[in-house]
Amino acid sequence: MRIQWETAVVTETVGEPLFPNGLQEVRVRLGNGETAAALHDLAFGTRLQPGDEVLLNTTAVRLGLGTGGVHFVHAKLGRLDESFDGRDVPVKWEPETSDSLRSFGPQEGHMMKLRYTSLQRAVLSVEEASSPHHALFAESRMLGGMPVLIGELHSMLPAAVCWLHELAREAEVQAPRIAYVMTDGGALPMAISGHVRRLRQLGWLAGTVTYGHAYGGDVEAVNKYTALLAARHVLEADIAIVCMGPGIVGTGTPYGFSGIEAGELVGAVHALGGAPVAMARISFADPRPQHCGLSRHTAVAIGQAALAPAFVPLPVLPAEAEATLLREQVRQSGLARRHRLRWETPPPLEHMAAALEAYGQPITSMGRSLQDDPAFFAAICTAAGAAYRLLRNEGPDKP
Image (cartoon, rainbow, N blue to C red; front, side):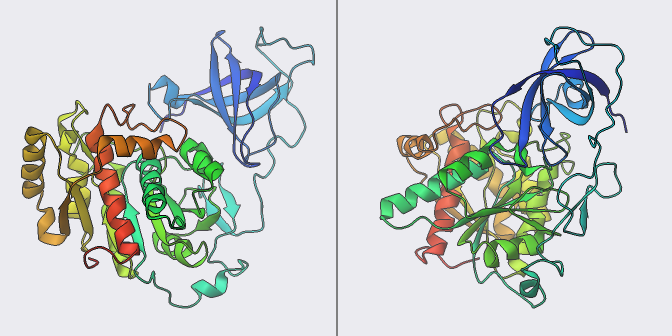
């Protein structure tokens, strides 16, 4: 495994982290004179200041990656003289003798994340004996029919939440309590998600759960099953949305993508007595053949990897050519053999736009907005609408 390390000096701090253990954004100057942005996870240590010397993991930037294409601060190495003006980076330095490499994060828990690495840390898992919620997990628990929206991409999260809130607004009822469960299929720190920060600012999330090696949720869980149960019984959610953080992994091969976890999640929700609702990945703006129309990822994850039935709402697209292709792709995928498919008329474009506008920030997927890729958002809103009706007992029987 190759990791690229580079040293740099912090030249300025950018904004303020929204939460105490969030991500601090800084500007740094590398040894070659290049200036760049870097992120510092405050769960790892104290805030950085201009003049601090840091060790950066620059692998993602050097590989030209997308979401992960930013430098990350691995450690603080030392500090320059207070007169540092941000221009000159020294070749050598005298390391500090402070606790810059101290134990990271709270130590009251015993569950290790990033196990057997130099960055492993202990968190208090919701299940363990010292957790105030331990008793809940010492007994057999179920989801009690809770609708669970299952997605592949992180960008599905804000769009789904926006539409759920829009439906509640139209019905003149209180919005449902929505929990976000973040998997470890993409980014591991919850703090990397700007969408979670925004949804928290709006008060649209009842809370968040991270499981596996993902960390930083309001609740930490060992696995997907206890994460779902925590969403229901600890956060008291009416609806859960489960998807990875930013940065899906794909290889262009049928099974080599981290979003295949969606199929496993269908099985987990089904086993716990919930109502799995799959958000299909549909696009007619993605230039990649495997993602034109019904994404091959959805066909594989839900059509093959999901061994339990799910509710799969699909939009009836207004463009005849697109609608015809989508129906043929769905037929070939075999989704109908295992799952409950339901074709529904999606919300009008203007209605979706109004719902997303309430978010107050752009929502894009792969850099494309609602106007660029309406089919993508139509699929999410169609699925979210179905989950909302299941919650209110207004829809068809649960899968």
